[in-house]
Image 1 (cartoon, rainbow, N blue to C red):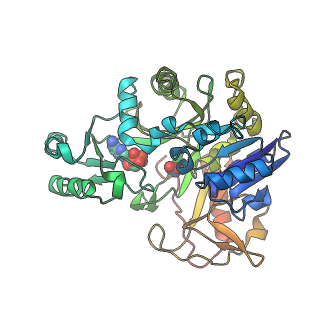
Image 2 (tube, rainbow, N blue to C red; image 1 turned 60 degrees about the horizontal axis):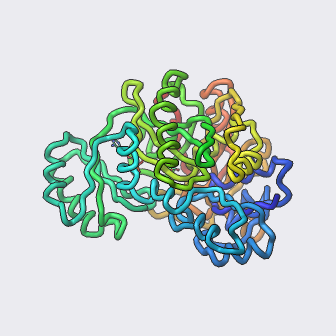
Amino acid sequence: MKILLLGSGGREHAMAWKMSQSKKLTQLFIAPGNAGTAQVGENVNINPNDFEAVKTFVLASKIDMVVVGPEEPLVRGVYDYFLNDALLAHIPVIGPSKEGARLEGSKEYAKAFMQRHNIPTAGYLPVTSTNLEEGIAFLRKVKAPYVLKADGLAAGKGVLILNDLSEAETELKAMLDGKFGEASSTVVIEEFLDGIELSVFVLTDGVGHVVLPEAKDYKRIGEGDTGLNTGGMGAISPVPFADEAFMKKVYDRVVLPTINGLAKDNITYKGFVFIGLISIKNEPFVIEYNVRMGDPETEVVLPRIKNDLVDLFQAVAEGTLNTKTIEVDERSATTVMLVAGGYPGDYEKGKVITGLDQVKDKLVFHAGTVLKDGQVVTNGGRVIALTSYGKTKSEALKDSFDTAQKINFEGKYFRSDIGFDL
Ligand code: AMP
Ligand code: GLY
């Protein structure tokens, strides 16, 4: 099978690495990919949101399947684009339809879905300029901290958590006035959930589904979970507090109602569901859906799956996923992200990365890297994710941190406390 993978981050390098191990794979292309994906497949210089360019390449290269890494092409409707094109309709796309992708593309849509299907989540109110007064009354009713979410995609920056009521009222108005552009013309106000976060991943063909290993990521830039939010600074799987009893609650109350809800609502969904959860006294509540895998969660989840990933994707495409079971590596996997100095604010690119040849025996997933004049240089805020296995998470982490010392580039930063709270 010839596969085209869309995306260019650490998630895509991990997916490409895993797919490249499949006997079913004959050729793997990654658009646009990075210096890491180029080691396990062939990069093609195409923007995943340029569907015409994707089409031209898919037809010219006789691609048999398209796997979508990031949310943006999904929210823009790449699944439907293929389905509605006579020349592309027979080529499976691993990812939800445009309607399904609204679970990530619109917070209000996701909350209404959860409410409709009795999935536990925080109380909320959608607010636009037409019901601002109601929004302010809701803020005054709920207790601090105040959670304000831009309805649309805002590159992970659209959620504000504020302690002060008057600040929350001011920010609500600023968001409705376009603080995050069109994305915040609707704001979802939520009750604050006080607990510990983790993520659960499901692969589904719309009916059949498999639950993948859970993971916990570390979103803040600073040690001790302080400072600005990032895309994710590291991750751990398994999550020690997610024991069998907790995961059964997650399955019964969240996973199954979600999959059944998609079917009841006639939403075509053949891809990953990423369920962001908060555990409050061992009770799971959903904070968000994403319609793709997480990054850097993928860098610990896929290394723990023993199955052939291409075989699983084929089952998704054929609607036979209910015949599959996931085989999990019992070891812990951890990943530590090396980022550019200044990230998640302004940072420089093009810094030469050294030491990669010393860690060839390690799982080194490239995120923001590119090959330039024969050298691997930085090309993003998150640069490289270093994954390790261990009998325990501490053992795995020690290895990830050791590797982090061996790779260098100007301005390199990483959190040395990944897993500190577990
Ligand atoms: P989201 O994009 O919806 O996942 O929100 C980003 C982050 O904000 C989450 O990962 C949580 O850390 C936090 N968050 C979101 N919603 C809530 C909530 N209702 N209560 C507490 N924290 C939240
Ligand atoms: N690491 C969080 C995400 O992928 O959204």
